[in-house]
Length: 76
Image (tube, rainbow, N blue to C red):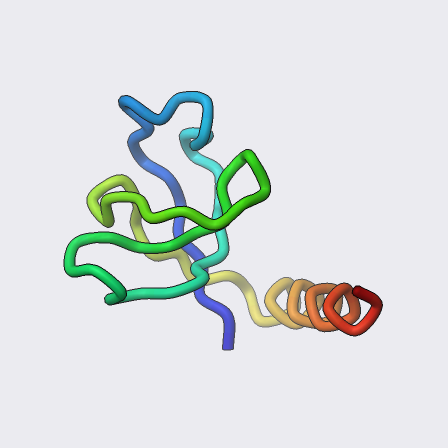
């Protein structure tokens, strides 16, 4: 199951994070207070958790995202 966060603050990270954009979580609890996401550079980095809020996506959208993500991995 994939988890997503919405960016609510990007102070100090304006180039790397887009406010109000939804980001997939790569890893949680790696370092307390931080979350690893794929940012605007296309790479995964740690950012303060306080910059994000969890968001629940509709099941139909989540299914579509999971299918495309798994297909992308398979074709890589």
